[in-house]
Image 1: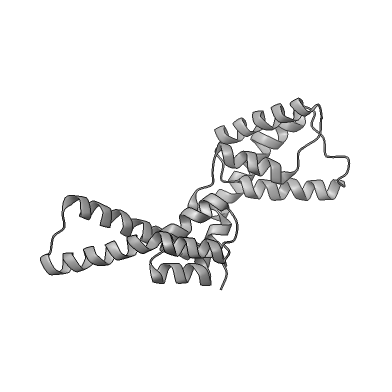
Image 2: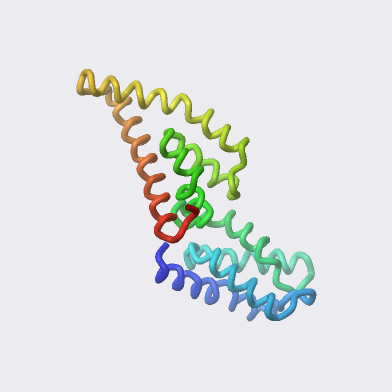
Length: 195
């Protein structure tokens, strides 16, 4: 997401989520200082800038109903709102700073070089946190069959010049996913991702 889209997205979060919640009477949590609350809202706007107007409106209803059910009139913490947002509208692969950073760093470069980038991407979309060694091992194991199949198909293609329609479709899909992972890594590098 470029800076213009990010700024527009942050503006939408204020317009479709924060302002309507404040109009409903939600106030800052009493245990949070005003400057800390404002910073929380700013960071939340940055994190939710990927959401559509409809997604933000749905999130506003979700937050309001959960707050009303608890009998309180205070803003929930940003982490809770972001979690609810993820259930309504997940960020795209390219919108996640975490995914960009992982792919533009050492882990992503290894995944791309070894052919298990798509499996890493799937895991990152599921867990939404920095991958540990167990996650990386799982990604490599899940990718083993796909890597072998792609190598086999590439060999067959170079020998005979053709693949069955099923194999050609699978190969094209796998290559497209690998290319997408490379594009995510480039996006991360363009925005100052991990070196």
